[in-house]
Image (cartoon, one colour):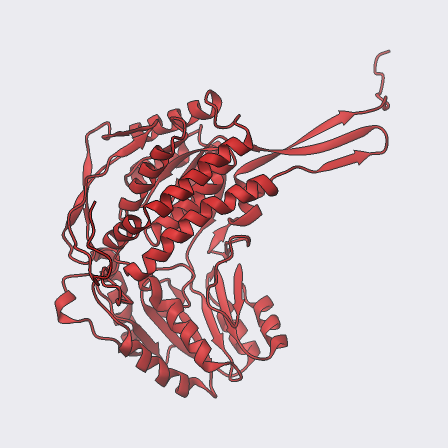
Length: 504
């Protein structure tokens, strides 16, 4: 695929090649011959046509993954040899970074200035887990006097189902695929049907890397057919899902009959709390970036902004100016900061919440969508001023560039309000009183808290949430030891310990 030369601000929007399934080392049509159209969120025209996998295709992919795990070399391969494949995937991602960032923007509407960073992060996902497996994934020994040495080893599970979302899809796919493959498992990936392009590119990269047939498989399709079959399949040993909370609950229920492991990274309604002693300019930068980057379609977005009453008016005025200055436009333009939402249905949902905010009594402040891009699914950056935490727009996940601004008076009040929501994924605290920063961070019910920082990523940390924001943790050693492998304990007698002699 050719893109325009470097230095040009815009890349051409054009139809790309149709996408097939990738099963047992082959790109193939769906068994039923079904397809679906992939729509460009900027033009609302067809990007391409995608093979629609269904139950029979999932069954084929699982059979291939099982065969590759049980009969093939992958799970039995020496770690150093397996890591050569993992490192090769990282190299190929870097070699294809320009095309990957283009496809990601074309598919999702994310500004290309942001998708370029995602390709680099995806390559690092593979390199990080190559290092982790070689340096960290080892067992422990437990001597018992002169009678026993007990030790643990960590074994791969087998075929693993990965179900990934449409926001930042390539980075999130690789964040799951990398540890799954590095630990010796085989994979069936069901990417979001709204963003198939970079998932297909990942299949091309892995195919070129030369992984054994069946180790990695992709089945495009819909949750009700392909996804549900993957979750319920008895030969799939674990399901890792990132997405909406209601879907996560259904997946846990449907996986119960086969007692498979599940990891759920779900929705959020994360608070950003600014006290009156904070560095207000830096807090402003973080608040704006945290909700309006990635088009507001991010689970860790600070969609509830709590401002101390002493600085609320000053901060809100600065917010208004920033919102009006955010560059809205073609996601292929390097200057664009906010692009279109993923699809028309989601666009309508976000707009309906903005109308609801007006009904609930908020003052709505919005940027302006340029006339020349109104064919796309553009919701301008939006502030909901004078919001109250009990409003639906402060309780429900909107998943768009919409931030509710809520006033508070003291620490106890804001902690209570921050926790008065069903979600608990992330939180942000801004204060120059470090004791208060720690107190509030520990009191807010969220799996991840940043003090005086935006959402800075560290691959070593456990990633996940509390309450309705998820079950389990991914990232770092937590992915390796707690999800993608199973510990096995081996007891070795090194002396003649006492054995009861029944019936002698």
